[in-house]
Length: 287
Image 1 (spheres, rainbow, N blue to C red):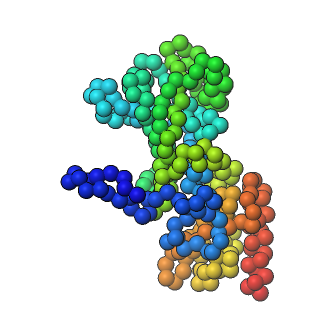
Image 2: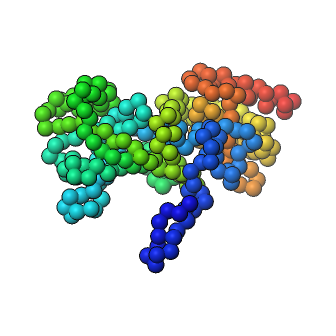
Image 3: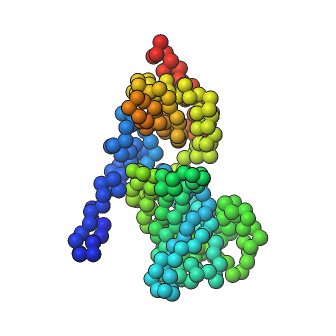
């Protein structure tokens, strides 16, 4: 897949690790280089992107400046989402980005995961939605207003100002980066049809609880279901509807693992039940 040209005119190839996932199934976007047990399902990049964007309400809006003409112009923007995951923005008619969009609708919105103090921001997930920015039709304003206020309650005091307007960014392409080594372009239709992970709001609590209270059980599961019998310790680092990710400590060093649930889960109670069952199975196998 050719993506551009160098200064000397030669065509450039997209690096292999930057390709769009080959399939649309939940496991299709897993890198062949990731040490994942066979059959462990995981979210597609479209699902990961939709989950990240749904979980935030602020990003960096880039438009094409009118002066100096054609240069990228970045600004902070708050947003809500429509049913297809397209950002709905409430902008001042006096703002530079609004003037830019009136002249040229091409724009993008970068949404990034929060980064804890001292952590590497390049290891965090981020999504760039690239598309066209256009005013929301008058007949849709009432429903968009409700969506926007639900996502941004602090906008209540100026939501009815006459010099503001709702705009919608219609994605044409989506770039997902999940940290080092996990990235791809996502088809806009796949993004629009993806569902945000229902466990996104409880990930922190589940991970903290498992690492604080059940570290020995995690190591046991890595040795059995994770096919890493040399695991000495294990740390959970993520969980979603399809499974969870851990870092297993071994004599050869840390090893990332992905372990799948037997079915898609939707609540923290279902996660707890699935993990209890996995631990019981591992203990039975260990004798």
